[in-house]
Amino acid sequence: MSNVVETVKQVVKPILEKQSFSLFDVEFVKENKSWYLRVYIDKKGGVTIDDCVLVSDELGEKLDEMDPDPIPQQYFLEVSSPGAERPLRNDDELSQAVDEYVHVSLYQNLNGQKTYEGYLRAVDKDSLTLQNDQWGKQDTVIIPKKLVANHDSQLNFR
Image (tube, rainbow, N blue to C red):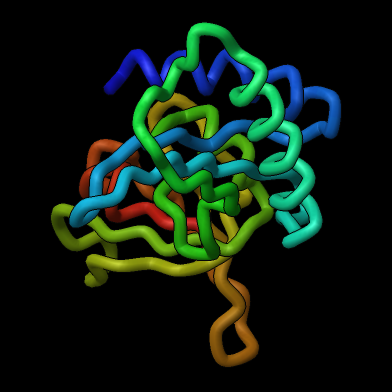
């Protein structure tokens, strides 16, 4: 099914570029007896329902026009944002999340804590800088990336 995902990525990218959106992910999965094509889009400031409808309509049209049909089985098309607590999976996504509120889980304690929440202020090749305003005092912590527990599930944008 990765062929379907790759085809959809190629078809949706020009639609997204035209609207200044970015592609977060594409999934083609079977749940119970139904197939779902899920396209997750993003943009600075967040995605609206109208954004999702716009992309869904254009993508649906493009896929319907293709011959041969890249998805021969019946499926449901869903276009949405990656969600408020989406994982930050790589350095590009980390860089895009600068100045956003994030949650970070660590493999081991840093300054007596294994989790941090705050505004991501900087990212470099070795560390993340978080700023938190707790109880009226502003704390800044530099977290070595090697301590971050699995980017896929433990570093989340909120």
